[in-house]
Length: 333
Image 1: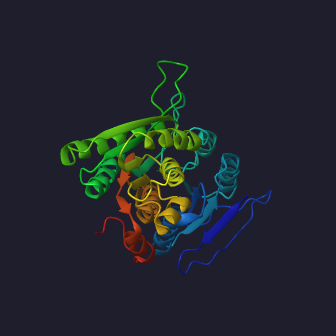
Image 2: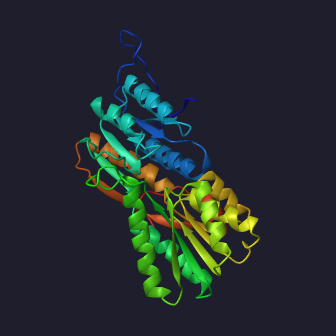
């Protein structure tokens, strides 16, 4: 399904002239295309809100397209943005591997491309990306460690759900984007726990690609033999699978669960008390900085090739603040 949200710059009237073939020509007003995996949920709603805020303040046009978590739709959306002759494309990849075609198509159009939220696996392809704006995953792991350390207080074992990628056919194949993300989150989590919660046993649970059914099965088996006080999942799919297994085993009441990403299902689980917290990028700042940096680039300013956005812990108390916080500029405390 193709969805488009158009936000016009403040006090800017849209004057559309058509080129032969029906494709609109670029106007004096800058137009930023923002491609997202979905426009549903707290996180992506925050990205749109932040981008919209910056677009209105900078008097530019913003076109937002949603892929509905489908990479073929994502590719079609990118092709549509190219046909609309947007001045820059901000792309939050739907999948680290399968979104490569969409990124390559955007880059080939000679329209500047910024990646938001995550990178794509392009070991065999040199991609001319202007900038990658993503979370500091090591710091995110540290925040997850802090949340669990405070909750478990050395009472019981903390399980670390580790997503082991499928073995590469080529032994010399470079580390995938997903593997890098998991490794950095793991390093941050392990470092924090070792320094601040040294008496708490940490038990890695290795599950290939953090598949939902595999996590449910493996964690169910673990619950039979271990006194588990807390669980850290490297994405929301894995932590929700662990929550599901614990509910089936009727052992969820005394376990603290911390995930990562703030998907719609995870936010609902927090609201229902089944999940205690998730670590996530500051979605508002991700959208706002994406727009501001793209406009700076188009204005001839130099933009760093890699930028990190703040990460935060969202629990039940923080959700209310996160939903209702007033607009603020990126970088403000």
